[in-house]
Every structure is written in structure tokens, then in C-alpha cells.
Amino acid sequence: MPDLPKRTLGRTGMDVTTLGYGAMELRGAPRGRDVSDEQAERILNVVLDAGINFIDTSIDYGVAEERIGRFISHRRSEFFLASKCGCLAGDLLNNAPPPSANGRQPHVYTKENIVTGVEQSLRRMKTDYLDLVQFHGSPSKAQLEEHGGLAALQDLQRQGKVRFIGISGTVPNLDEQINMGVFDSFQIPYSALERTHETLIEKASAAGAGIVIRGGAAKGGPGKEQGDSWDVWQQVRIDDLVGDMSRQEFVLRFTISHPDLDTTIVGTINPDHLQDNVTALLAGPLPADVYTEAKLRLAQGGSAPIAIPAT
Image (cartoon, rainbow, N blue to C red):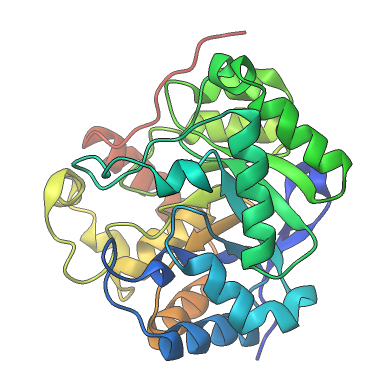
């Protein structure tokens, strides 16, 4: 099996595979589809056997952390492990109200919840340290500082329980988060059909941070021909650029064509889908002329980066 391409995750100096694995699908029912322990064990080991060395998870992803701990903790040296904080943990989770209509739990950025969450993740995943802990929910600078959450994570870093600090960021807070200058990496949504953050990705990378893309293969697969993003695809008539690629391959290769991307996390429970993603990755970025033309057409259809204020 050929080695997967790697890029250096910003100032961390760590080399990560350009394709990472997002563990959200391991959460199982009721918030996700039913996934057995056998399926979870199989896909996690297939991920590592394929050479993928970046795994992203979260407290919010149900039993995903426990499954990582049960099924691949014995292979801990083979992967860079990223999780999240600010998610409800311990007593806060036990006494939490029902999730909102969109299924999301609130996030709390107090010192106590950050420490409880990280300690819980360490226990669940049977590890002495987390390579990266990212604030979940794109909190503002004020939210990060008001109740000591950022300081608590930095203290855990000094203790060696956390190697690097990141944030899962989106507008409107992403520009402010970059300007804080404290984050080693940013996890940002981006794909051909969701280019809102394109220039902010460039700004974060220029500041020395690593770039983790989520949603990098979004809207590209079978059964996703609906919604605003699909309307954009139809409007710009991009299929002639796709050629003999599947839409999934085109969208994923568009994502990895962004020069500032370090890794993109793609989740699946199906080993065949994983292999399709690996094959697309090995095909490399889109040809330069196709990439340029795709961006022009997508912008005309409304998939374009937002302008960021000068600083």
C-alpha cells in the first residue's frame, strides 16, 4: 500500500496525513445511526491499517471516545489524537436539559468543565495525553476568558496532559480567534460547496496555525442531491469539470487542493467508502486549470469566500 501524503500541522511540527478520520459516526444511536461494536472496531483498525494517522473525536460524539479506547488504544503510537472541550462533561452532562431541536448540546467554557472534560477523555481513550484539544462550538474571546476555560486548558498543556491547543471555529468569531494568537490549530468547515471560510483559512495558516478541515467531502456522495448546496451544484453546471470522477472524489480533491490545508477529517463506518476516499486522496489535488475554473463557477453560483476586514 502506498504511503499517504502528509503535511505539517502548522507550528505543532507534527506530520499528519492529508486525509484524517472523523469519529462522529461511531457515536451510534440515538443521535446517529446504529453502529455495533464490531463495526466500530473494524473501521478504526482499517483506518490505521490504511496509514491514516489523524483521528478526530469529541465528548459530544456519544460512545466514540470509549470505542477508540477499547479498540485501538494498544496502537496509540500510530496516530495523532484530537478531541474537543467545552462539551458538557461529568455532572453537567448528567443533569443537562434535552438537546435543542437541532440535536446539539450547549457548551460551557468554565475551568471546571474544561478540566472535567479533558480528564474524562483521557480515561475513556485510555491514554496519558491528548495530542490536540479543540474548543468546541466556536466560542468568542470573551467566552473563552470569562470563566477561565482557556487558562484551564493552557494549564493542562503545561501538565503534559494536552500537547497542543486548538479551536473549532466559524464566523462570526473565527477572525477574532485567529487574532488571539494562542491556538496551534483551527478546525474549519470547508468544501467546494461551502467556501465561506476560504480566506480565513489562509489567514490562520499565515499566522502559523495548523488547518484541519471538516466537511471536506460534504454534499459529494450519493443521496445528497438536495438542499442549498445541491442547488448551487446544479446552477453552475460543473459536471463537465468532474469528468470521469465521482462527485465525492471531485469534492474531496477540491478540498485538498487548498494550499493551506493540512488534513481533512472524513467520517465513515464503511471500509469501502474509506478506501474510495484514500483512492481520491492518492489521485492528488485537482489539475490547476480545473481547480481555477471550478472556483470561478462556484463563486457565480454563490459558493464564495467572505471578505475579511483588514487588520
